[in-house]
Length: 466
Ligand SMILES: Cc1ncc(COP(=O)(O)O)c(C=O)c1O
Image (cartoon, rainbow, N blue to C red):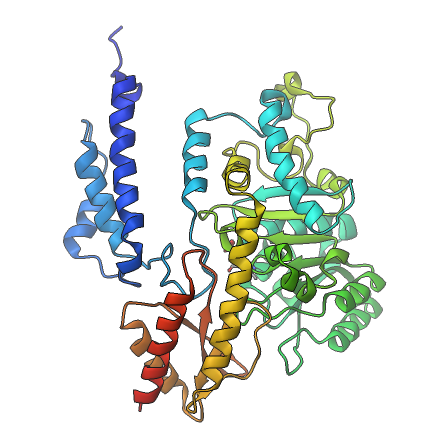
């Protein structure tokens, strides 16, 4: 038998050299974030050809491969930099990236307690920390997912199982008109037809209209349908608006439905005093989606769900398998595979545990509080501009605005002009039938300097757009 190529098992010196090369590239990239263009996305034909080649049979070298990665990454929205003020930013803190590297390098199995009890305990400690943030009871359970969409799907699947097992044809779901698109996707994935997803209208302040929700719930129950889940937003992706959570909870529970709060964007503002005030009622939920890759600034790929009843997850997802019989654990720690659709997955917990322990919770709280304060300044400044309309005071960190009395094409011209500076990237949306621009202050690298630069750019562009 011939010896296999040993390059999959680099020596200590080779590992040091490879790591140093990657680290150098990463540090240079991060150091360059302040000056990087905000939104490139026009890779040359040469670059597309180079990155699309099939893998060769022979080894490459790290320097030229990193250079190719660097060229590809250059042609992208600068989602980790201070200029990213569109959609929902986050940034991606370095120490969480290190934790990802460490976790993947160790490559331990954390789907079952028996295979790595102390690592599971580590992940469980951050999950418990999230449950405690919302004063969830001891029977509650947190989960780390790949993002908010998966968290919404897991919550809805549990709600459907508990409320309408075997009767999915009669199951109905309720979402506000500004709810995130992942919820309709979740309903369809969970076997609930699009026609059974009730879109509840908003009041003038863009919050879910509880009277309309009540009416829809009553109508459906009278028609013999089964309301399985009511979704509220805290806050919406469009405007960061927080729905009237306590009232929605009452309406949902009176109708026998599960109450889920999609707080992918806003939930972690619970860390701050101002956030807790604005999120009043969130602790009444049966489950809450959080997205640490948004308001905890972790790299993309870490979402979270907290559920009031661990048993609900177990009833939904637990399955026995003969080939797992050696991995029974009678202790109190959870087998994550029994609580989610996943079995094998990376050690997600470390990506959250390491930064929380290394920086301390206050570092995150201060960042979020700064973003709330900067948003108030942005709102006041934009309102003072005579050509701009800024109709809604932000609950969180999104300010929406438009040129007063101008058509949608002009609003998009304004957006282009702002983004053409390459110092900021804003995005747009439609509200009440019209185009609005969105300024979202959430990246941990965005501070007062970049916000005032953004406000100057917006103000100048608003003066000049005809
Ligand atoms: C309110 C809300 N819910 C859910 C999601 C989906 O989260 P993810 O993109 O992490 O899947 C988002 C994403 O922006 C969101 O803003």
